Length: 180
Image 1 (tube, rainbow, N blue to C red):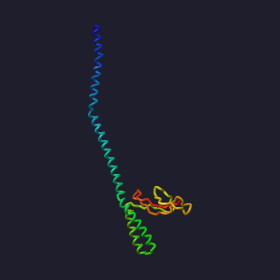
Image 2 (image 1 turned 45 degrees about the vertical axis):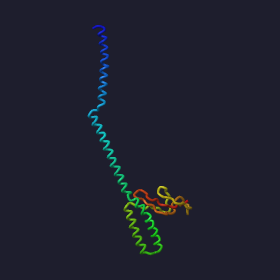
Image 3 (image 1 turned 180 degrees about the vertical axis):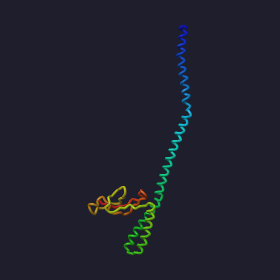
């Protein structure tokens, strides 16, 4: 072989790997564009699992919302009945003053029946006594008066209107007078 042939062969050898690399790059690009069947299956499995998890979360959330709705479904009715219960309490207090035992007994039976029915539906009275510590989270202060004694400062002196809870939710805060 002559020098010229050697040079041409070296040039040819240098060009061929470049062409082979270009061909491989093109083939790799083609391979990258079309995912394999296993990759497609894996992608579909992933989509399915995500959709299934999302549906499970939806079911849990709706069941929690439904339970909460059942717990507080009667809130509007209960709130409407609270003034009637207050009137019953005021009426019973006046009948006690009149000392009519038969009338008092009849009204007491009706009042107890109403209270028991509402208690079965989840309504409970918030107990407030004179001398309890005032808590802004539970009580609604309507006025402040000078405390009759030093130990009643910042405490409940009188409960003007009862408070009620439906389940764990307060539907009416007790209205109280606090000592200053």
